[in-house]
Length: 350
Ligand code: AMP
Ligand code: MG
Image (cartoon, rainbow, N blue to C red; front, side, top):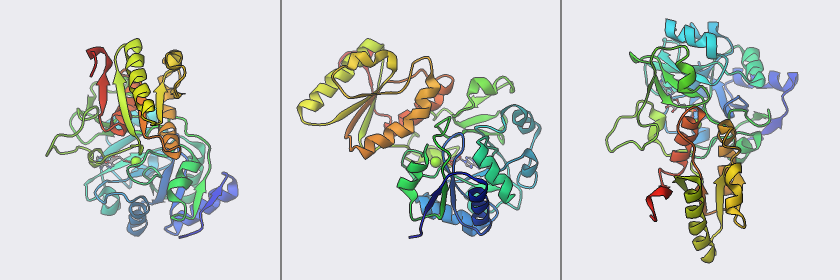
């Protein structure tokens, strides 16, 4: 166990973070998507310590973060599509997969010949990356399998004693991990949806493919385009069920299930949009924001799942969003958090 300091971002704490990273140590830091667990991406030992701290499977590659586009040149082969995308979306929540160069250790890419790269926009992440002048490998700063951390407290809860420093930058703005876009395939392919939506990418690219396993589980024997998609992810300890359909049918269905569970003495929590919460009066519901602001649901999801664990809630029901815009990323995470467990409330009683 090491002593974990939780510091507000100041010039001194950012310098300390940079020094720790230069020495091969781990630092938890805020980004606009979720908190990252950073280490020097050019140091294989440092990269391996990320896997150890998270309990991350060794074949799930890491994303390499840099402050400026020029820093990508030594790391990967940047093509014209990447340049066009960077003009519009970087810094921001877009990760690009590009052919890697020799300098990037295989420990970082989990043996792949491509590397995932991102330029975050969060001012604390940027200040830290500039101060250390290193590319920083950083997955989400959670224990593998748990919902990603969107506050410094979440990082503390999972990783206290496993790293010397966490920078506290408050709550993350996007709340879901970056969009992972594969630029090594003939048509750019979204492997993981995130803050940069397909609709946004299509303002720059002629064609974008969406990996079709984004809203369904991988089939037996199916190869994952992105190794991370193989694993169980984002799941709360309690059992989460998504309920789809017309709002009044959804509310009716959730009410029936909740009342039945409560009659057996079980606690239930309902994730509901503001416009529908009065349909759950007398039951325990939490707001996932307004239907008109799907980015709010994205921002809150992981934090709500973590609170449910903190409060030992055994059963959760959630309303859903259409899988377009940021709704695609929200539904991708919700499906995985629910283990694809869902009810169609319009189909009559299940
Ligand atoms: P995380 O760092 O936890 O947000 O996860 C990074 C995601 O990017 C995982 O789903 C990885 O499998 C994916 N990823 C990273 N590098 C590559 C790569 N070279 N090829 C395909 N997917 C990648
Ligand atoms: Mg992660």
